[in-house]
Image (tube, rainbow, N blue to C red; front, side):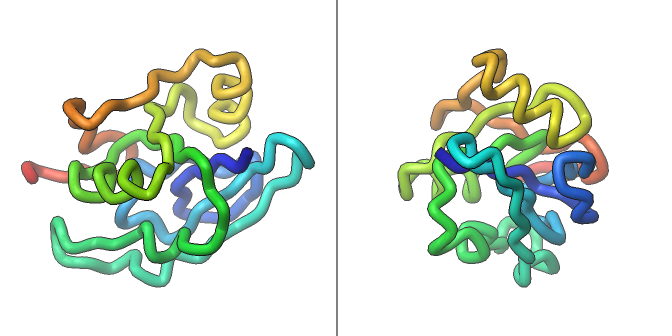
Length: 126
């Protein structure tokens, strides 16, 4: 299983989790089986509000889950429709997110939940 975290700067597991999934400059991934971290550049980081498609950056990366501080409804629905689970981040660093995910301490978001805003980005209203 591979989990993914939006980040502003790639410092591996020491990266801070970025406040908004769609506008994150990149994503740190963590493969639970191999215990290896990776990085995916988000070429779609600059977007008009509500028009981002970060799922395109993750295409082909075999990500099973994302752990986020903030995510717009559209991006969350696109991920879920592709079978990617979305979890609410607890902790500031990717390593905290990995530990909390493995300990099953994170809240799995459902389609009727909204979680925009937080961290280094404020979404306003969608």
